[in-house]
Image (cartoon, rainbow, N blue to C red; front, side, top):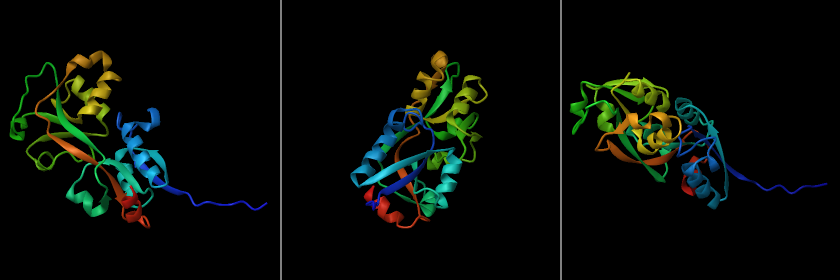
Length: 209
């Protein structure tokens, strides 16, 4: 018998496990993923989230394997490669120290003596990322940075405040009191979908989002 076919608009998204914004084990994949799904569904799209490490998400999206990568910070360099959506959430980027540490700061220059944990491939702030006088140690994710800080293998880490709080309430519950956020935050940054320019009609999906 003949069947009727309806064209379903679909969008495929590369995403990092970035709790609580997005996570494979979170309800509806997390509040950030829920915002994205809802926005797309209002424009008639179904949404597929593909979880993977950050560097792979960037590379696979760039070549057009996925429509967009979720939760990107803006940078001029990235804007040459990806088309940015309107921001849909924001992230407060902070420095954390071990509670035993006496570190405080008012400018980045004050941080020269310290080993600072960062995540490979992440954009932080323009000033921080271009500060080649700072001692930065790269790892693959925030959990590794939290472990290094707990074991005093770095002096500070750069991390999103919500992510730090989520990790402290889950994986690092027993050591929660050993971590302390520094004031002021490095920056409060908008979060974007970064669309691949190598996908046909990417600009239409961006506009619909």
